[in-house]
Every structure is written in structure tokens, then in C-alpha cells.
Length: 283
Image 1 (tube, rainbow, N blue to C red):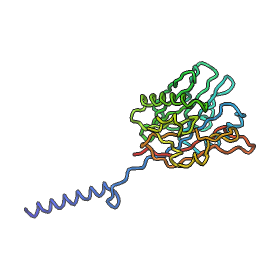
Image 2 (image 1 turned 60 degrees about the vertical axis):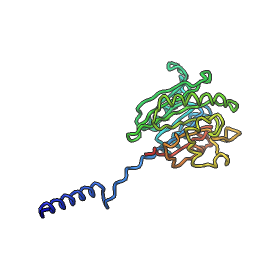
Image 3 (image 1 turned 90 degrees about the horizontal axis):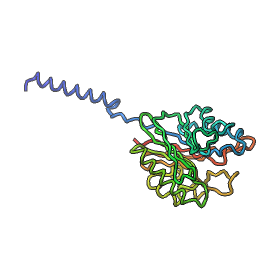
Image 4 (image 1 turned 180 degrees about the vertical axis):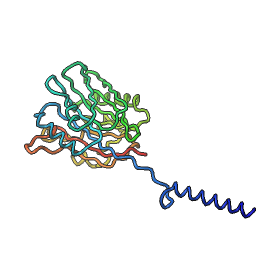
């Protein structure tokens, strides 16, 4: 091999190494992809207009503002001829978009249902009336954009009686069918007031695909008597306000019971406490 060809090869090899080092970044290490952002999620039953709503409203707004969540699910949302939709009022105070879902006719002045508030871009929305229809329950759906990645959020409020496990089981089956028809392979969260703890027998089908986020961070919570039913209003304790995350799709970083303190005059935000969860979409 001639000296000129040898020098040319050495020069090309050195240039290739320089380019690779420049692409790798400082120290020659390949740059790590940016970690997905955290998402803060809250679910809260607001107790419609009972227990002096005008006094409770500023407490809910104040405590939600301090939490600054990305997503808020609200249950027992009411609007009447004399009362503006409660979710719209809260959303306007906090600067969120709002999706209200009700089984009541859209042209009816009195409507009662659930809502989702978010600052994330909304790509699609839908809702479904749950079986049995005479229980007037629903599940709402919003597909959100999280830094270019889709996230499906479902929100609901299941049957309320202690002995109504069979009804809740039927509602869960219907809800999961709706999720399977609308979510596909998109990561999903299911939020709301389930009116029974995550370990209830009627939620076996949910546990096959979803993890109770608070329970995952606090495994002894239910044995320790953690409740989302405000003892000021209820004689029994139970953690029924849940954030369920699709198994294997999220990293659950933290979880707390929130909106659990009264105002200076003893007014409580609601008859329920809220559940707050911080999580990340897995890469």
C-alpha cells in the first residue's frame, strides 16, 4: 500500500471517530433521552350543592390551585336554572378546559353528572351510559396529548349502596368494554368515585388490568383505616375515591389524600376527601 493511501485511510478513520464523538456528546457518552414529564392527577366528589356550596367553592378552588394538577376528575357535579355548572365554575377559576358528562338530556336545565378538567391539549372526547340504565351512571373519556404522546383518561361514578356490589360489577364490565373500544394501545387512567374500595370483589376485572395508584404507594393504607369519606359526614371509613393506572404503563411516584382540611370557620371542601397521584408514562 502506498504511503499516500495509508495516510488517506488514517485521515478518514480519524474523521469518523471525531464525528461519532461529536454525536455522542460530552465525554463520548450517548445522550440519554429526556425522561417523560410527571403528571399530577386528582379525583374529588364535590357533593353537588349541599352543605353550603357558596362557602365550600372557594375552599375547593384554593386547595386545587395549591396542588396545581394536570388533570382533575369531579363527581356529583350539578347545574340548575339558578346554579351555573359547578365544574365550569371551578374550571374558570383555575384556567382549565372542562368536559361535563351527564345522562340528563342536554336541553334540560337541571343536569347532574361528572366532569374532567385539564390544561393538557384534548384530542378527542366521548362518553357512554353504563348498564343498568336505570341507575343513571356514565363514563366519560378524553384523549389527551402529553408532550406528543396520547393518554386516555376515563372518569366515572359507580353505584352507591353498600349492598350494590352486583350493580357495580355490571357497571365495571360495561366500562371496560367501552375502554377497549376507545383506547386501543393507548395508556389509560380510570378515575372517580367507585363507592367501594379497590379490593372489593366486584372490582376483580379491574384488578386484572389496572393498579390502585394510592394503594401501590401505601400498601398498608386500608388496614390503617385511610379514608376518602370525610368523617365529619360519614360514620364509617373507606377509601373509595380512586386513581387506577393501567398496569405496566406508568411509574407511580407519589400519592396522597388531599382536600382534607376545613376552612377557618370549620367549613369542609366536601363530604369526600380527594385523591392526588403523581405518575409518569413509561418510555
